[in-house]
Length: 194
Image (tube, rainbow, N blue to C red; front, top):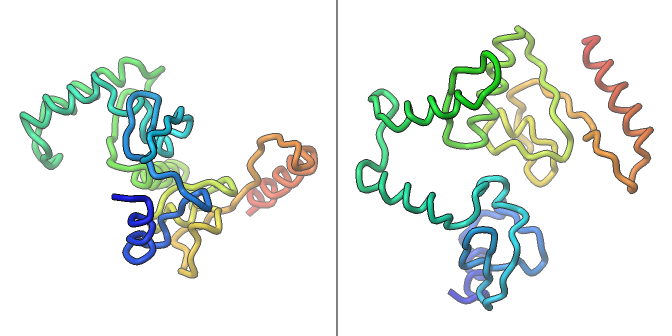
């Protein structure tokens, strides 16, 4: 599909919620390991990783082979049935975790993982409020939209949870870092007082 056709289809048939970061978005058509290629054949070093979803590179040979092997056996089943792979993975994962972190709860998306984290924190602390960083994206589900403090993903809908948005504590020459730190401490202190 040509770049022009893709832009036309996008404008007519793809939700504007699927944002692009550039006035003229790059159209990626291939990836291998740490590289991506656009439709003109230009190669890019991928330092973005598909918003942290591709942590081992694109089309990584070992991952491709593992996927092929698994798809030859079974594509999907529900967790109400046992399957050896989830148990093998859980054993390998907890062997690398420190201390008493020895139980896994697998999720299928970042939104689901973030919702689970909030739920577990609320159950453990018996507190409802959550602190989330401004300008961070946490997902598009009802709970995670409330955590997300970026106007790109905010809509005029009722919030499903009590969230305080704090200034991201990174230091930047663009901002007065001492003032940012004071503001963050003040907002956190006010929130903790309840």
